[in-house]
Length: 269
Ligand code: KIV
Ligand code: NA
Image (cartoon, rainbow, N blue to C red; front, side):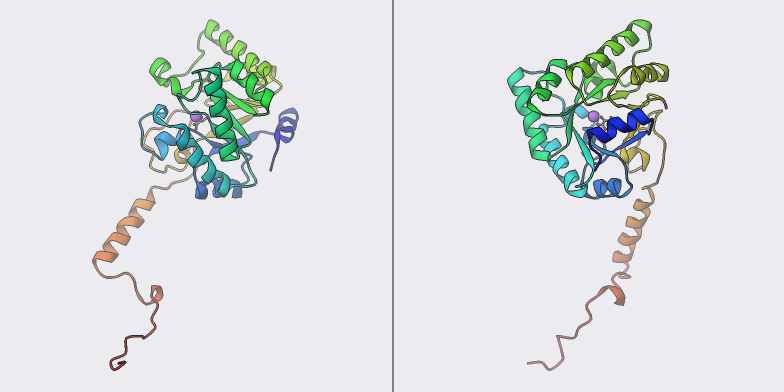
């Protein structure tokens, strides 16, 4: 498993870091088998596997449930788990309790926090919880910012640079930058010491992250500009239709799939 030091070294040496979401045992197992550097148990699971239309309905319990499953599937991969909507920004005590619970229960290597919660990042660091900061487009704030590209003006770009530096100063171990202009992301990646992982943030960041269900076309309809397709789960529906037809038509199970041991002989009384 890569640790934080390895990931820092990768940044220093210009070796790009790969990160992919996984929310359960089989997907985490696949991501680990593929040799991907970091697994993100993202709250995007609210949309991809729970069927919500945004991430704001995902609970801390949901994240713990999925985080634990992902850990069982990928015992040897660096795992980051998202703090969901409503679990941060309430009060110091509650935020900290939520962070501790998520970190402890899931056995994740780090937690990820959306937005400018720099004091919380600092407090987490103080007690030993590694935090990944998530800036730019932060989907938990969809009600305020929508899903559009962020930091398009000089002022908002400068604000993002300041926030990124504040996250690093607060002790964030990594930064995820979502849907921002590539030249800005490149500038931030160069300016920060910690690895900057981009999604819709161009090629000059220290690594990339995408959503498993998006890249494999696993029952996802929306396709943001930054998603590249790498696989196709859609034929699964055809396979299930075939199964259904074969059951109906009594073509399954055939000889190969049954325990053909005679125990009901004609005169076995
Ligand atoms: O929840 C998620 O999948 C994420 C990534 C898109 C960065 O936060
Ligand atoms: Na997320």
